[in-house]
Image (tube, rainbow, N blue to C red):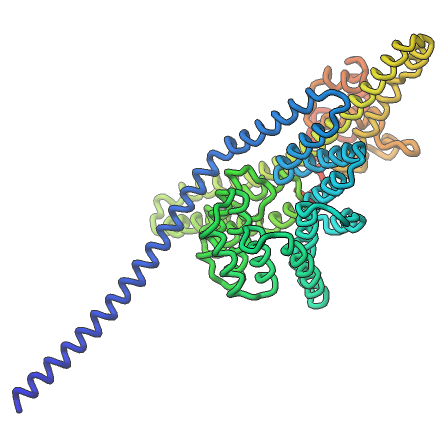
Length: 542
């Protein structure tokens, strides 16, 4: 009996030990899996950061291709319309996920050549491509207007596929944008119809077919089917960098909405790497990655990636994307600053214990405060400078384009008159060439662009004078000579000789204008130009 009791006791202890070992083993396995997943994510982030550091090399590769196509276009002779169309098509492909404005211009040229060839297929192809970049920029109405008037009867499958897919994407994007209980289901239904039409044009099992299946299932919350479709693409298909980025971003949407942040982050890292390597600027991966890392508490990386997302949005020129990123960036930046403030408060706590260092800590705290304030001012100045640069680069190219077109037209006209020996007509053309009118148009365009950036410039300028000394503009006049001089100064052009050349005046005249204006001002002369530089640009889109 005692022996049985002993054995029973031993057996009980063995069971307890066995259960303990099983629990310990399970804990070790879970811990190991968690550590492995964390290590994998850290490894992916390292690859992303390395790729990001080399982003200019990928951009340069795309620019090289763009310059190659431009060189070929410049060598074309008159009448080579088909070749012209082919090169513009390739050039617009390079731009369509790279720079919106350039893509838009090239596709408009593509349309012009298509209409010149009078080929309905090429016309439809160009119009569908226009739809792609319009929806990429968030212009829903313009996309639908552009595509709704197209006659797609007897069009090739390749054009029909893109046509249906762009319409599907437009309605799906509208459903995401509105998030309205009444309209969203309607938009999804329309998106489904166009997805189905596009899917009939692709072979079952192909990349396009599987992606359309996955996208439709995702939008209609068929979770299991969506996961099967998209994961099968990632695991079993040979994808381009752009295709990889698209599929990974799409699949990440599922995991984000189902609170599986780690899986979403890993997919978004892969998408971000692929976007950088393909020099794609029309992308949402970096923004979404920054948001997920921000939720996780990785503020350092989140701040790097949200800045990259804003750089891409500004580079591409998509207003919708800039608004989306702009809504997130301040939150992450504020958290980053909050972390700095938290560290500063920690130092202040230590300083109360180590009283000997209290004065030193206060000094450092003041320095940090000044640096943060200076950083904020610098960031604001950079954003303002970027906007000014963006507006005036566009202004510069538009003006030069107009002058080149005029010069080309004048050249062709004179060459024609020379061939026909109509010398009197040439004299008439030269006599009627009016550079003064062109200069006035240039000033008018400058005034419009400047007042778009600085809408309060005139009223603020006049606040520096008594009532009798204020500028009174004539009807229809935006700026006069005095205002233009100080507008140029506000843009950073301080050199009087440069201002004189721009406005076609002598240096002495500019000095006289400036002296006369400052003499009438209630602001001291030595402070007047500093007050001009303090006039703020409009903050929208910054």
